[in-house]
Amino acid sequence: MQKIYLDNAATTPIDPEVMTEMCRVMETYYGNPSSIHAHGREARTVVEKARKKIASLLKASPAEIFFTSGGTEADNLAIRSAVTDYKIEHAITSRIEHHAVLHTLEALEKAGVIKLSYVRVDNKGTVDFGHLEELLQTNSRSLVSLMEANNEIGTLTDMKAVGDLCWQYNAIFHCDTVQTMGHYRHNLQELKVHFITCAGHKFHGPKGVGFIYINPSVKINPLIYGGSQERNMRGGTENLYGIAGLAKALDIAYSHMDEHQQYIQRLKSYMKEQLEKEIEGVSFNGETDPDKSLYTVLNVSFPEMDMADMLLFNMDIAGISCSGGSACSSGTNIGSHVLEGIGASPSRPAIRFSFSKLNTKEEIDYTVSKLKDAMTSLL
Image 1 (cartoon, rainbow, N blue to C red):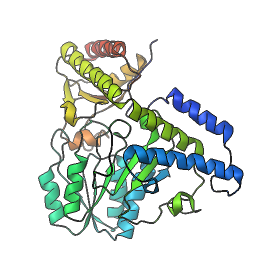
Image 2 (image 1 turned 135 degrees about the vertical axis):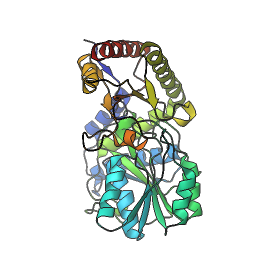
Image 3 (image 1 turned 45 degrees about the vertical axis):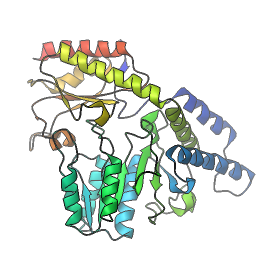
Image 4 (image 1 turned 90 degrees about the horizontal axis):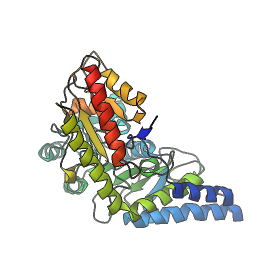
């Protein structure tokens, strides 16, 4: 049976060059980067070389990059430390953010630490900038946490525009860039952002490693205490091999970004065209304008059916890995908070297909064919 992987927004296969680099580091460097002897110093060189590489790609200073276990930890560090250390009493987010952000902010609100406001988004997931400015005007100094690209529907948010608005109202801006890092270029010298976050496994790097960029204008305390690693910002022995793999993956992504973006965008557009041609009644969730949508994500709603939960099951049986769900129907099921947040119909099953440089047009044809077969049998 053919096996097709179309769930790259969840995680990506590791690049062979990344694996080679990680194995080289494993075989060569085994000292603790915090040790002062020769083996430790050699390991420390690996960490700092990776930090310097990442900083150069993002047009940042190495002193502004701190390694973490991934995007979730980085989001928690930015939000919890900013709220605590700057005595923030008001935060702004949207209802379609990743749970690493939403659940963290909701926990702080439940504990009585902050008041939480939700900026309006339209039916494509686009942020209402007028409402955002109103929330900034009518509240005390705020923490704004908005992602650059939605992980379920792909809608992009103009990070520069949000940053400029936050700067105008003296707000702290945290941007979850987990879905865009390695897929778009970031020039942090041109952005008014205090924190951005990254997870290496979203662009063919290893799992369990990421980083946070912290603007030097903000000074925060650690989320995880222990040793003095990461310049006292994150206790715990550094993930030496993961850090080396992360830097290698980002370097590869930047080196081939334009060609990969064009290739993947063509795959996404082709699948959209074939679905419209072969399956009557499909629609697409999120922004469909290529300039306003993440080129790796296509979220599709299918016609209403009695056995909607079987659609994703049929894809799995056919060897196709993708993500599914529907808008939450209050009191009856737990579905996608993102689709609910943009007002999608809870009666229509939805599937997120997400692509990488490793996918092919032939895989798209096979997937559309199997979707057509499944729809015929379920309707």
